[in-house]
Figure 1 (cartoon, helix red, strand yellow):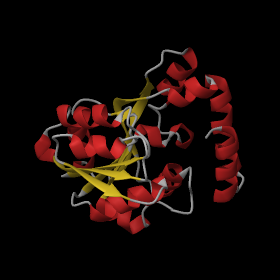
Figure 2: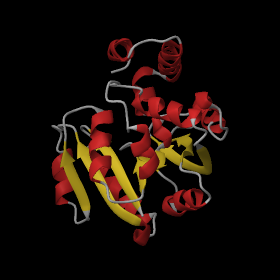
Figure 3: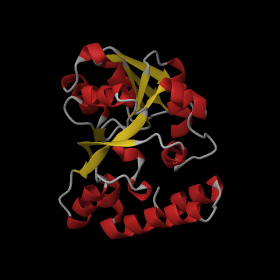
Length: 229
């Protein structure tokens, strides 16, 4: 059984569509629960979740995606955790694809990525996500992981305000516990629309290189606040 954990902060534009998408594209007998962890939304996101006629659990938390996902995981009852961004829509039968991998003893992984934008650079970036290269990974691809492995690692590192997905992925690669499912999750291009494709990609690369050379969580967050947030 899969527990889906979605951290949100002011996601009124997408959260309702995502929740219906998750229900419409899975076999519900495979879904233990959907847990939405709100970090203090002020745009009506909480009310949208509460007013939907769906069996979705809303939890309140302090802001911070790593903290929010850890809190969601701590109350999850499923044997498999599936962490998902609020603007990313997994493929049809995503539940079956995840369970099939776990049955093959692949305890963690993600989907390939595609954007809701046909820009040639984003199409190329999407194409690269089919490969197992560490540099091609990111939180928008979503993350499934058995609860046992997640707890053994210690969850997401709450010292990182950004890049928390990548820190967990790094640990999974070290343990050789990562697989890329050859199905595409579609994610929003909203940050690329806001900043421009090449400018935003430059900033993402800069953060990646800074971490490679040992930048602290505080340094990465400061750069993100200055150039992206």
